[in-house]
Length: 402
Figure 1: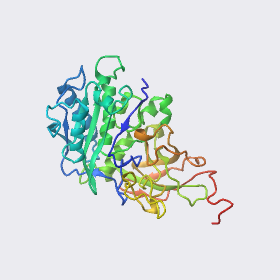
Figure 2: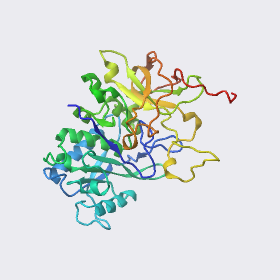
Figure 3: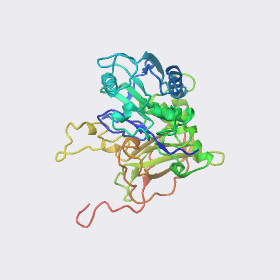
Figure 4: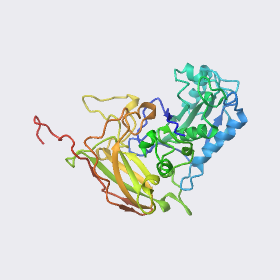
């Protein structure tokens, strides 16, 4: 069944999602991540998920969703349930059920005191927050951030989609709901949305569905509860397993390049870049694909001496290095890949955005044919795979000189 339900990233109030891979970048271009010296602790609501899903069942399902990410063998990310959501000023009864209690717990999260998983059994919190309770299943993301890493995260679940009542919204199946929140726990962990096999919004075959990321902005199919090649590659790049055995470096390499206007000089931001494997098997390029957005590291708005953004928190994330403009870096399992480019879907904006630009801008000009096959060895980076767009406007107009 094609679901077509939007999935939201709600991260720090300070800034937008900025990647198509990592959710937020530091000024040096490195992604913000959690410290994984110990498992990331989270706390669950001590109330029911909905009228038909009790606390114990919800707790077990939440643990299983986190385990989808924890079970990636090439990543070292791990999670642990630290208990129920802790009492704090304004919240004492264990069950987050009002907007005031929600705000109190969010304050704790913002201060890196705890990472709450909140069940909104009757969607009253969604209503109080002004969120459409009939179209938003839930949201998640980091709450607090230091100079180098995330300190806490949160997720809020809309119980109306699991209450056994078709009014005011039809239930999802348990597997569909859990697929949606496996996606949300990707945001919790620091992942942005990814756009691969975007045609699946309008119907597609089994191979395209197989390559559809869990982190795609829309829940298309229940199979998105199982991680795609893209999801595995990016969670492993953010949290690489090292040492002996199956590691990120022993299984994955990286393709890098820059997307350029047709002059071959000007760097193009906000273009979706997809590496598709072409080793063996029919339609492997549809099932084995990893993506990123050009310029994914770069600050959304750098400013200058005239239009300096100052301390506006929305523009404090991301690199300011000119070399990161238009840059793409794609982690892939070892093999042979072609590289292709496309526009980000114009509907993917705000909490459903992909990459640093929201709303997205159309790719300048048109896309060249996919590249020749690029051989990628495990543990290596293959560089210089620039993509030159076709038919873009000239770099200078008749009133300017080069």
